[in-house]
Image 1 (cartoon, rainbow, N blue to C red):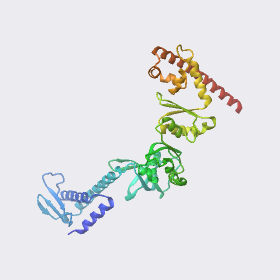
Image 2: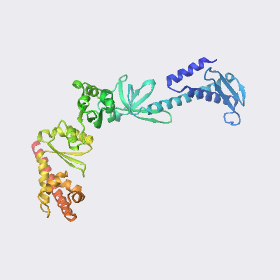
Image 3: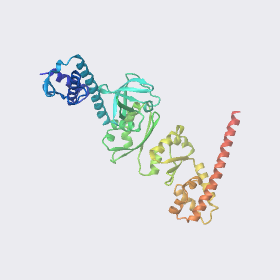
Image 4: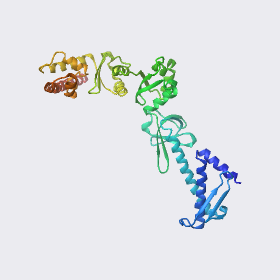
Length: 405
């Protein structure tokens, strides 16, 4: 009996997470290669060489053309051949095992230890001595990782190449936030609370819209936790990234108003034809609604799926006045026609020019000839408005330059 061989195979299988049967087969194949080299019949298919290892006892039996041979008498060079073949096959089996395991874990959060940097790419050591990489694009801006530091990231992709398996990690992907909420908020993991939409600018700010299937559960409060305990854990993991949690609504107007928080919205006009929402906010809410470098409105637009324009009441009234003024010259329009356009979310001559004739004909039953006149008037008014806005902008720039002097 060769119990030492059995123990070695079991240890290799356990350490490298390889099926024992694969190792037995690899060892048999390596011994066949060694025997063929010993007898000088590597490429001679007419000579049959076989090796069998008893899976229970570890006893090895080898045959050449059905005549049993002593595998231990082959010599040093064939043994070296067997060793090289065995190493190659075990490495291949290990790669296959790693690929099979981690391809099923795509989207999971894993813990690792930061290793070294290779041209901006961070190498992370996972369990069982498996290495993963986090490209610079998947690292949170401003965050730094030091060798030996614990790293928590999501498995973004697993790729197989000829020589290695590439496990790609990410801390910037929006789904990383989803998985963190799964771990920190039991109601999300159980499906009681659902993250309906998420938009993120990694390292800066994330907006999340949540809903619940249980009316007794406050989805926003549950995600925040008692005294902010749950959300604080996530924010700390992300290095201080701001997270806005808002309640989901099937009403686009309510959802847009929620998404623009902390700004308070005065009025919302939605144009389904353009996929655009015009939001009116007071002067003191304007900077909040837009956010630093336009971040708040940009994330709200991604969260809701609507293009969002932010206007003050004065800007809104000016656009509506332009719209009403350009329609005065069109015959046959009643005085309520502007209100009908506003109900469609068309609040400016630019909107009217962009939507074209079809909505006027189909939604408002405007005759085709009259619709053509309306659009023509809008096009002329849009050109005039563009010229006026350019002149106003140039005047403002000139005044600023004069102040500097």
